[in-house]
Image (tube, rainbow, N blue to C red):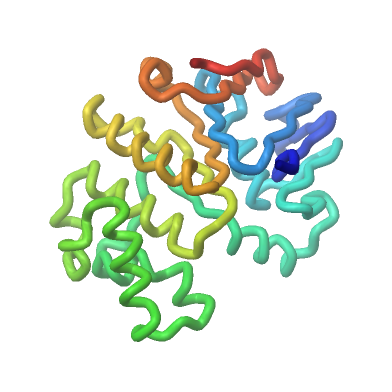
Length: 228
């Protein structure tokens, strides 16, 4: 069996905001295809900034960052958009469109790629079945609970079968039981071969859902270990 390749690789990565504040400094880290990685650290440690760099929301100030074989410092916007199409993103506040149905929300990543409705409906049904919300196809997000809304966000993130899913505090607004269910879904997605990188404060969840732990503190990497 061949060794898994690095899907993300960084050396001496630095990010400085226009204000002059250093968000990340000297980060050296590699993430292999198919890993489940918890990104931890205090508020302001740099977790969200690092996730944004993985899809081109921020460009490195210095150092190297390669994501899905793309040099993110040198990539033009067309190349960055290609990386984004190959990246699923789940936010803490899920960012659903409340004026659109569940179908329209979940279909969005492939709709922008030109898929028509006849092709989209079976694909949307399939991913909704994965998150156990296939009966909500034509509902609106406001009719769903917070946990259901986050599950819809996961369905949207996996719609285009991306090799990488980034989840920024996806359980932060949920009760513990619902948070575990959402984490189960992300773990299930990982078992299908998707690399999952999840920023979280919910460290107690690691006891039941072990994985690789990457801890940041004040913009620096301070721990890289495995919880079992």
